[in-house]
Image 1 (cartoon, rainbow, N blue to C red):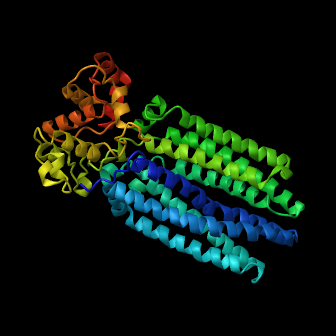
Image 2: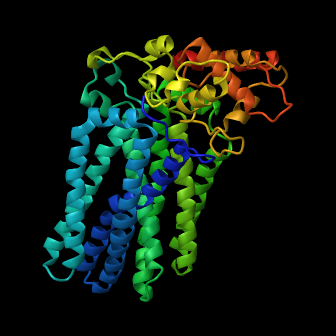
Length: 467
């Protein structure tokens, strides 16, 4: 077990979510924009409209700055954040897909070279050569997404990889193709949105109107296709994730509504500017990008939530404990070892004085156990942003008895969480710490009527699917 990266109030998972969601904006723009660029440039040459190249120059400059500066910085931020928050998870992904990442970097380097060559040779080389450079970039960027999508989808739906451990069994998993088509469609909508924003700054009204009308059509088509492939994606989810999505257990009601609202607002915006190109202004365009971010953040949040309690489905829990054996890779679950030795002994960074629990260090040991086993999905403070543990425990029914023993049932049977790994004494220490999270004078217990509710038929179904 590695040390825990615990961020007060915010939580490490939420930090990753913000960085990753922002990264989608520049990275998907970088993947999509050159298809539109090549289309417009080709149109310029065929119809003898050199004035369209003014848009090309501005659009490519936006890609260079936004995608290859801010996108690169946020990409590094993702790698740093996921490495310190879940070292074992990122280690598993790298060890299984090191050649996948290496291949993706080849195409990323092609992107970098192609965009600089394309930008600095505009108007300086023959038209066919310049269009070819643009196509090389567009194809290289899309192949880069093809590779990354396979690895991301693998974490939610490993498929036959759980049995075989094979590279392609995990890569071409059940959700891969629908997610790839969904993202491919979505990037065309993103390309259209950014093109409208850039075109809104042009002075030539004819060029401005042409670009906005074409970009809005790309936006509408990409949005509709992305919505259709999203439905297919939902149908392809593993049973556990599908049940979590349908039951809306870990997904606050507002999140799906934000996704739907963002889709509707942006689709209406595409229609409006298609009809009235002159209404496309810089400020409304920037607001549309913020709405896009809200939709992307909510959609990515859904994907992450329905993967719980795993980082890699049915292999690695969010708290870095290996849930199941993988004979094909000679890997065994470490839950049995942790139950025998204790999570405090298994975690080498824990101070020696806390590895053996006694009456004097019970509370402190319980806090460290909560950090190890709970903080990947919860903040420990009552005012935390990410499923704060005090309120989550309270919602489960801890309301009326003054003994921590009542909490042990909660730790043993509550659905949607990894099974507790550790000794009985460690479980008591964690329960003691959870009780201490309440204000002085309050009492906590596992209310019988809520205990019955928490193990209802639907919840039992989820527990069986998970375990």
